[in-house]
Image 1 (cartoon, rainbow, N blue to C red):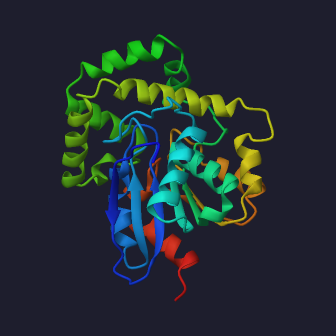
Image 2: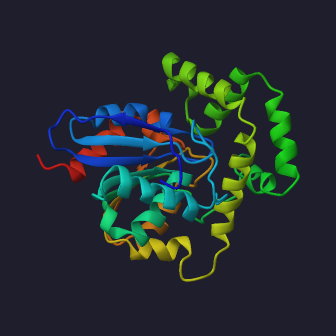
Length: 283
């Protein structure tokens, strides 16, 4: 593979099960899918990758941190590691934007598409998400990253959890410990902040695309059955985007979870798992 990726594998308990590929959000990693991957093991052979520059994956050799660049890595993984067999594709936040790129440009590789709070152009400013375009400004983002790096790692992790969960107390102690362990590891990587900022800039840059391959136009090209899940209490992706989604995705089922925020697959893995199996698993 031209991109080196770290991954997690949840082998299916079902012989000959189809594969699922899980794509994490900005600042996240394959760890974000742990609970959902476990719940879906009876149905799919689960693979979660760390995007280049995130988790344990090194930076991309080509320096491309755009959603399309990350999508190329996902496509390479499917083609080379999964023999080009179509997958059930999951994406959260930035991973949702990447999944749209994959599903629209390579429909032969996608059986079904599940998007959880996908980062598509529909931004209504609030006190949380208004900081993202500010951080994308060259110089300001780097300065903010340096300030955050001075905080204790546990405090950083708690801050992240607070921004993506409706109720941070839902985080299990084991999951918190795993997040701290990973953050500690990444604090040693000199490229970590740059990967975050460049991916943020690439994502926001896609919001400004007015061409025929802009995100919502790509959504209209997707033929795969699609499940979209939003959290009513999500401060990053407004749940009202759900209504716009129904106008662009051809075969979309849309759910809005009233007591969830940005990472519904982590906050309510059971509900997300049941929503997926009820639509895509033959009983």
